[in-house]
Structures are given as structure tokens and as C-alpha cells.
Image 1 (cartoon, one colour):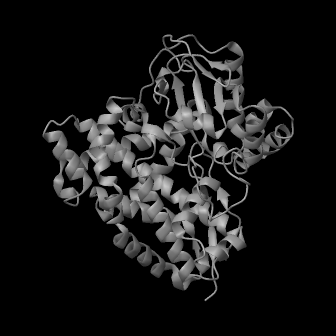
Image 2 (tube, helix red, strand yellow):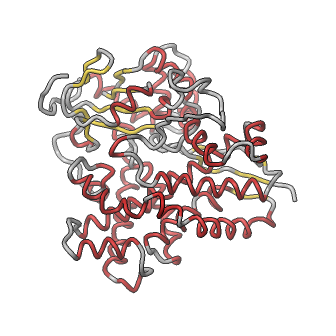
Image 3 (cartoon, helix red, strand yellow):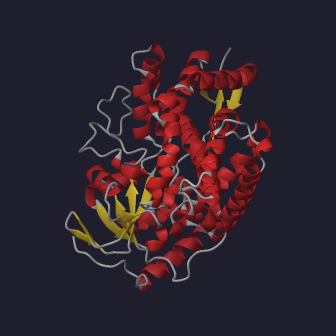
Length: 445
């Protein structure tokens, strides 16, 4: 490993050309993109397959063959438009914890000299998700007390009650769209109650979350439309939270917003802007990850009748099953880092300033760590998956997401013993977050 300053040189011309090609292809109509990607994915070379993955949601809905090829042949691979892909578990785990990797994408030489501006850039500048130490450590420390295992477990009765209420409302229908009726609104209820967001405001957050989820994707994979929608959502979310912070009568007393406002007012290293962005991050991340975990996990179970039967019978503890669902098809497929100095990984030098993508979804099916990794094995133990990343940037709300998923899946399976798919699931077009757009379900009385 060699020390150096963060590189500022622009990406090579071929990367710039490929970036323009990929972005142009992403704007094509699905009728054109679909056959293009289907052709590219059959080419026995990694670059065409990666282009197919980038431009086609249909290819991204089944990424496992690509992940396998990368792990087997190209565990550390640079692909246009200048990304380093890391696909093996040992490497991803080590780099997630590496002290000389940054989560601030502005340190990457893929970006222009002019700093990004706009509501979304202003929003992310103050959140711990894209902050390096010491700012990250300070922000996380102030919020982490609300997510200790003991505090999260205290929420179990309320989560069980909220889940039961949602299921009561849909039971007589005989069918449900899981995302719209349960997997999205339930985590919103939970995180809003924690924060002190009034019930009347909660319908606003799913739309903002969907726009911001796409905006959180890696920069080369975002279209201008995604950027504009993310800016609008960030501005509206910021304005709304600013109003809740300004007027205490608009929020439910005793929530985390009250606690963070008090910290800021006492001058304990938390500015008003940081209160807004921290609350915004918790609201978005607090239900996006959980909703995707619930829906992805339930779909995997419905496609594996033997695993589902073992879970229904009680042969496998729900908590262990949730860990395997996280590994098998987790809600976060990749995270990005920027090298702050030249790094050597498996004999390959990754130069300073280059953008590194840790493919958590690929690492979680690494046969060097997991026996028969393609199989859904609910009794798998140990299960050192990286679904919530690792190191100082590991998901703060992981224990809450686990608890919500366990409660929802248990109540769904207990209440609806004949639960089944009622149509074709639809996947979202995002890259970093892997989740369904719709999951239609039905049951017999």
C-alpha cells in the first residue's frame, strides 16, 4: 500500500465515452432496452454483461449469474465508467472496514471539479451515511442510543400491535399488494412514532423515499430525471422536517426529534441542519431497508415451499430465518467507497481517488464462506453475511429492521396459512437498494 494524495485527474477518455453510452442506453424505452440487454448478457465478457446489468431492470432482477462470474473470474475488476467491483466476501468485509476508504463520493476523480449543488447535495452533506470520521462518529454517537438492542426490543409490543392492525384491515379482502398495504406503511408507522412525526403526515414519506432511493444510487448510474426527482424530494422533505423542528406543536412529544432538538439547543455538537438531515436519513433508511427485507424475504419463502413449511412448523427460529433471508436476497446490494490512497487488493493496485463498489449481494453468496450459497437454508449457522455492511458504517437500524421483519413474517404466516402469489412480482429499477415495486398476494379463507 502506497501513500498518496487523493487523485484529481479526470477519468480516461474511454471511461467518459462509456459513461455517455450507458447513460444514453438507460434513457431508451423498455421496448428497446430489453432486447439490447438480453443480447449483451449472453456475450461471454464481463463488460457487456455489466452494461446489460446497468441498463436493464430485467437483468438486475436476477443478478446472481453475473455475481458468480465476477467472483470466479474477476474478484477485483475495473469496469467502465471507472468503477472497481469487489465481489468476494473476504475483500468486501475488509474494505468495508478500511480506514483509508471514504464514503464521501466527492473525493472520487469521477466527478467534475465543480462541487455538486442542489437540494439533494445539501441534504446528504449533513448526514452520517456520507460522512467520514470524525463527523460520522459524532453524529452516530448521538443517535445510536435510540437503537440499542434493549431499546429496540422494548418496541416489540408496539410493532406487534401495529402489524395486527394492518392485517385486520386486509384480512377480509382475500388479497393484498404487500408493498402498498403492509411492507411500506408499517415501517413508516414505526420510525415516525420513534421520531415523533404525527400520523397525519406519514402518507407523504413513501413518495419521497422512492425518489431518494434512486438518487442514492452510484453517480454514474443516475439519469438526469432521477437527479431532478431526488432534488425535489430532498427539498420537500427538508422543508417538512424544518417545520416540525420549528413548531413543537406539530410533532408528537417525547420522540427522537425532541431529543435531537434538545441536543442542538444545548450546543452539544449538533447543528439545526444536522438535526434535519439526521431525521431525514432515519425516516428514509428506517423504512426502505425494512420494506425491502420483508418483501424480498417473503417472495423467497413462497418460492421455496420446503423452507416455508419448516418455518411455519417452528423447526427453524424466525430470528435465524431472517438472517438467512438477509443473506440470500438482501435489501442492500452494494455500497460505494472512495480510495483516499493507493490500495493493493489481491495484487491489484486501486489508485487514490477511484470509486470502489462493494457488491454485498455477491459477497453474501461466496462459496468460500457459505456452503451451497445459492440455496435458501433457513437453519444456516453461522451466517456472517454482509447485508448491513460492516465496520463503522454498518446499518445503525439493523436490529430494528430484523425485529420488524420477524414480527411481520410471523404474523403473516400464522394468520394466512394458504398465502400464495397472486400475480407476477415487479422489481424496482434501483441499483444500491434491491426491492420489489409490487408483490401481489392472495389467500383462501
